[in-house]
Length: 140
Image (cartoon, rainbow, N blue to C red):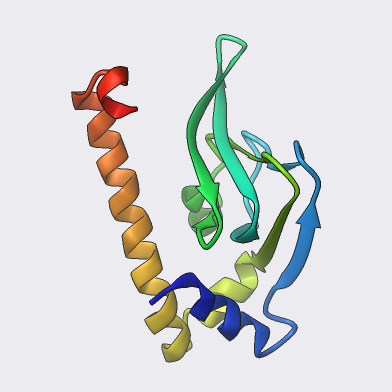
């Protein structure tokens, strides 16, 4: 399934998600805070980063038709290990954690969301292995 399917599903009931446009450089999630939202990027780009020794270290960029959250925080209530920030004017669908947990009981939502989640998990796993195995030149 493709994320537009998820967008369509969420639009079927206006209470499922909120479409919001944020200006560039808006912090959507702060490091150390509990994430209560998942962001589905409709238009624009996000950056995931964390602070180390006073420097910002970018983990990855999230672009249109991708979903992101601090999943450990969003699903388990742990503090986020990173910051999510808009790079440019960005329109997202925000899905509240409470709504997400309710939706996970819906078979149609599961068929749409789980393949996206598995794909995201696979991307994160490949990135982790690349950080361990490859030099920065090989990664980029």
